[in-house]
Image (cartoon, rainbow, N blue to C red; front, side, top):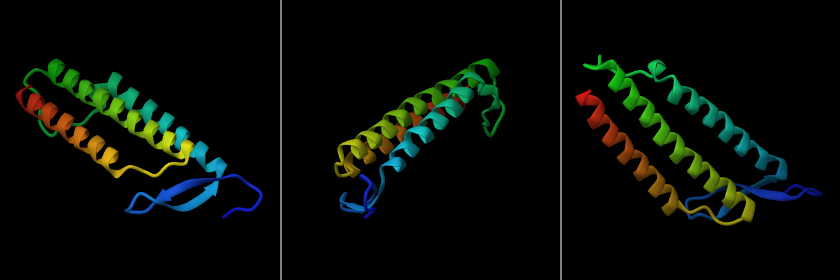
Length: 121
């Protein structure tokens, strides 16, 4: 525990209980990382021709448009998840692995649906 500074939770154990605390300045790190991830994913959403797909598309315009859509959906889901984490840090609550699991399942569903569409493109 840091003396003289406000402490915030930094890490949760497998039971969802906080097991590590740190300076309140660490709380600024996650929003910064979130902004960097958002900007990177926005770049790939707009410039989907930089995205990699393991084979050639029958219709490149449709294929790359689908890749941009996939990145856009994953960007939204990622930003929601990172916002959830920042909120939990802000209120000092326990991390919910059920909610994290739901985000992970949603990401797999989105990727599965888009892979099916991309294989047809």
